[in-house]
Structure formats: structure tokens, C-alpha cells
Length: 421
Image (cartoon, rainbow, N blue to C red; front, side, top):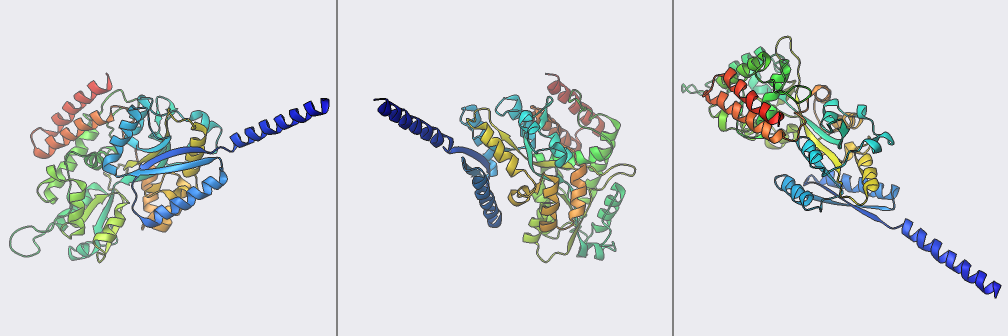
């Protein structure tokens, strides 16, 4: 009888231990949302990296879903508001504090403290975008910087400009643009312009204008995000210079956007264009015969060349059932050795960026320098309200319906109301 009881106990123990082992091997399926990426080689690289991750973590299965950019934000907001978000997604830098304030996503400080993720491994301006109210709400994934001076070397030569010397200072940018603005047919009408500034009501207009202000020593808001500083002297000077570039731009700046201006550049209508490093692919595709080069963001005499960060951060949702597994994937996807393979923009990890830029971009050292000094936009949940006021301000300036100083002062007053709510 004792032998039978012992045997039954043994069998029970085996069955229980087998069940526990089976549970320990149960797959945790986590979902990752991103934007649609049509470049075949990048998709193949992402799939290969995903296979490697799942080999390293056999208990985790990752399901990736992508959406077109124009649908992406709405899809995320609907899913998060309904309590059915993915486990992980990428969010635009300017969405990150909004998502944090809504508590859609979780702070990652405890995970970071126990991991190999270090803030100093990422571009400083990119890391700034994940910090809100003293906590870290994401990990930078990829970045871009507005802007560089793309220029047509052939047009430079015809205008008597040195094609190996892009403009470094604001006054040079204006002088070069004046030389490039010409009547090339002799019919008395200007048909070639130096560049094309834009002022349509999009985020690309903010990305165009803010670097002028920052490079002149100005700020949009104070460091603690409590006060708008647009009315200060540095901002007024910067906007006066920006307004002066209308003289060397085709008519219609107030309704033009960055894509409209880019088409003018690749179509041979303007000699210079202000854009991010990712535009290299666009030039190669649209104007393969153009001999072009790229220079730094011009700065005022005595100022600094400070661009504006764009890009995406990886976040983990509060509703995720598998936060630990999600963190392992975020840590892997943003690490050196992987980030450069799976990002379409420049990787936010500086070690990965070195590799990516050397392989995929012309002028990699110039790009890295600009990325290392670029500023993040104001990290506040109400960023979209703030930027709407600033866009209206730019429209007033371009239309000439308000003096520049008044337009800036009025904008500062409106933005202060937003900041102090």
C-alpha cells in the first residue's frame, strides 16, 4: 500500500512539474506598432533582426503592425483611449509628453536602472524628448535634424560661386541667394531663385523657423516650460532675417510647405533648399543627374548652428500584460548593432548612427555634428496648441499684417496662457 501511495505521489509530482515547465515555456505574444516602411531591404533587415530576438528570447513572440503615417496617430489615440493599445509603439517626439500626461504609457526609469541602456549613448537632444516631469517615458529610436543647406553645384558655378564653399553664416546665405536669383532667359522676369522659404500651417514650418531663433541665442520657451520667450531680442532679430529671405524666394511663401519647396529644388528652379539629411534619398530619386552637395545650417555671426530634432521614440503601454517582455524588445531594438539595421531615419543610438551614416548618407561627419547639437521642441503635453499659435505668428509675419515685434509679443502672450493653465 505504501509503495502504491509513494508511486502516486511521484506521478503527481512529475505531472505538476511538467505543467510548470510547460507554463514557463508558454509564449508571451507582444504587439509592436509602427509606421509603414516600403523600402524592401529595410523590411528584410527588420525581419532578420526579429528572428534573432526571438531566438534569444524563445518565450517571446513579437507581432509587428505598420500603418501609413497619415493614419498612424489617430489609430494610436483610438486604441489607447479604448484601452486596447499595442504593448509597444513608436511615437513622434512631440507626442511623447502628451502620451505620458494621459498615462497611456509607463515611465521606464526602473527598467533603465537595471539595464545596459544609458542616456549618454543617445543624442542629447533626442534623450530630452523622452523626459517629462523628471521621469523617462520612452527610449529614442531614430532621429533627423532640420536643417542643412542642400545646393546645386552647377547653379553655383554659373552664378560665380565656389561649389565647394556652402554658406556658413546668415549674411552669406542671403548673398549667395541673391547671386542665384536671376532672369536666365533674358525676358525681364526672374525664373531662378536662391531658395524658397515656406510658411504653410504645418509642423514643417516650425521645423524651418525655430532653428533660426535657437541659432541666434533665442528660445521658444524657458527651460522649465513656464514662460514663452518669443518676444525677446534674439527672436525678433531671427524673424527679421527669416522675413528678409522672401526677397530671394519665389512668391507664395505663406501657402508653400517644405515639400513644395523641395520640388522647386529638384526641378532646378531654386539653387538652395533647407532640409533634413533624409532628403538625400529624395534628391537621388527625383534628380539623379543633379550635381549637388550639402552644407551646415547657416548661423549668425557670433552664433551657433543649432538644428531642430525630429524622430521617434519607443514607448510601453500601461495596459500591456507583458511589460517585462516588452522592455526586453525595446532594449534590443534600440541597441548598437541592431538600431542601425532596423531604423529608416538615422538611429538615435550614437554608436549605431556612426555606422548608419557611413553606409547610407553622404557627408556623414557633417550630419553627425548637427545631430549632436540639435535641440528638441518644447516637451509639454499641450505642444500642439503652442505650435498652432506659433504657426499663426509666422503667417502674420509673412503676410505683413503685423509688425514682427508685435506678432512675436502677441504669440508669447497666447502661449503663456497655455503654459500657465
